[in-house]
Image (cartoon, rainbow, N blue to C red):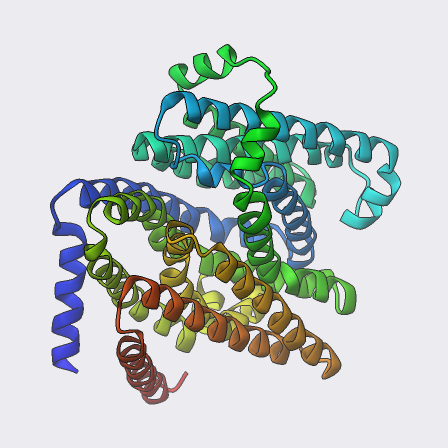
Length: 457
């Protein structure tokens, strides 16, 4: 155990002490994610005492709908921004992406205006802010465009700044509106909408705005989509399926249980996503840029950088996640109040697959680099199927805890398979590495659970 702790400490130090452009870029994105995480934790206890699980459940449904539409609105062409070798080729891809985005948003606006009653019923209300759906989708997509553009330009500091804005603005706005009104979920929606606007402003910059305004329409749009057809054909459905798989409990619980159950799950999910954002969210864009360069310039080095990244992320994430798995209900009750104990219990079941997602999310970029987008699509399709089966079984048993347990197991299985595929592509001995990780998880869980047993809580 002492040997493991010593190695764990060294790995932590190496993450922050490494020199070079990759380490520097990671430090920038990590700092932005850390600040966003800290600010999120500061606001969360206050929001948890103002908004009820029922209110948060309806808000989660709204977010699920807009984020799904946001992914579809760009055909995921933004994921190809790093590929064009010339500025002219990139601007053509940018032009095509913006035309697709505007077309989708206008179509959504027409649908909302023509079928507003159905939209109101689906979201669970009839407030004027429901008309924000198309505009929210627009800014979600614009944020994706600008973040991907910044990755191409290695402007990671600008992306890091937007993360902080994305953490502060929605929470502070919701807190103020919630205190001044009856704390309806419209306050959460308005806060989220304003955060999207602020993020876009921070991400944009004068030079990018000038280039966007200088773009003109031409007849190359369809040929550009054809050239990058793997992205709407494979990356888009893979990304959408990945998003859908995480949101399945929202749709199942809203249909078969109630909005309160959705609120418990969504709040637990959002709390677990904060540390995941700090690690996977910080390293993924930097790793994509670094791995692309390494694959083109020194492909024999891929196994080394992939293993080092994955192992460090695992070792950094395992301790806090195991603590959450064992003490989740206690932590949620102490920090957020009695009404969120159920969220803490669900978080305990979900912790392990979130730990694996810290490693899995950055490694998914390897499927694009190696031209194996079909594998990622099949993995995410399998994830949706297994997650659905697990939730159906939980609904059949009329047990939310059972549904989340089955849901978590299916996520763990697919993430492990996906990590193994990524390791195999890059030449990492996946069987030995994964066996060691499993042994560490079991040993760490037993030790931390023993501490709770002796404390008696």
